[in-house]
Length: 239
Image (cartoon, rainbow, N blue to C red; front, side):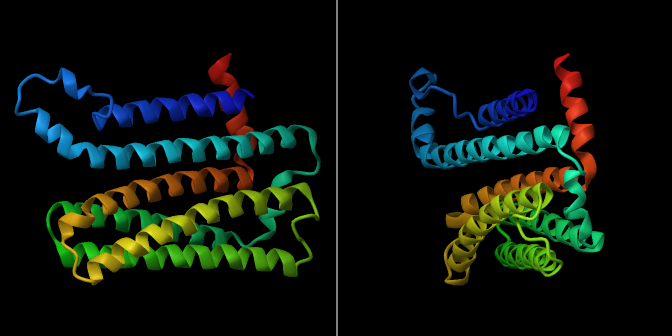
């Protein structure tokens, strides 16, 4: 419970700061001046989209917080080490997967900047690069699953494998969902849509991929033996 509460407090703090930066808590009827009223009304679809993504990320964060908490609690009572199953995989594979997701996140950030500057070709190139890097990540995760199964380590063989499959599957589903949105945005540009019409979508994709990267880094650290360090840090925060 300690880990869950700390994680949720951190998520709530980040979400509150981000929402305040987007001025989503502003009250249009309290704005001074007639000229300010119409821009606020025009910006409402943008604010709604950002708010919707923010709420989704908050819910997803709660889901992963519960999974992380279950993992940490299990490590305190189970032997052998729960990370042993994941450590059977070649470290190079998991590091390569991590690098692919980092590359996708960076590419989307560059795409967002290019869209903001009106650089259509550059934005499209970065979107395609992000999609390809993400597909490499997904392929790498599937390869990791296949290697465990071939080694006689299916999901029900040990608590370590159960957590590895569950955490990576939950994260993988979020990645696949993001790919759908990324594909639709890229397809609109390929069909000749104005860059201004997809600028918001590109920005939201970049934010979503940053979230996916942060979650994966947490999963990677936990499975590679960082559970004890994280649990100790969380306990220190509340004592």
